[in-house]
Image (tube, rainbow, N blue to C red):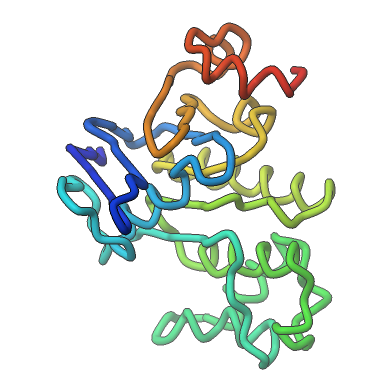
Length: 224
């Protein structure tokens, strides 16, 4: 279990994140929804340790052990797509086979010799996911994992994440602008606005019957 306690993030006297208490349990999938600037990405970066909070603590997350993080715009090096995967598998037996299998799973098996920096945004997102799936993880933290993908790419990513979850029963935490995606993929939805947790709960209940005015306003633009 990951537990967030009294987290504050400030920048130039502006409050970026204010989360008094939040828990993420193993064996569950969490979808964090909200508009741009709501604090979704900052929360993930605090969990990964790339943003240091002004106060508070994160308990139960060992970043040295089986944690995978996918930023919204994963970096792809200029060498081959296959090498982009293999470089993350140093000292791993059968790394060539693992890399090829991961690329096939994300639908990039035909692009192994293409240069990574020539891929589209959606292809780079799938390349980043392939890096995570090449070696088993027990925790995945994903920032808008399908924001640049088309419908086919979104189906591939969502299907792979469902397979990963069924096989590992790990902890999946992802941010998304799409409440519909959260409804498809999450066991619990967290709605954020202005760096704060406004409402959380079962996806069906929260998305179809939001209790807070802020959540109602956000979801008024969506039809389920």
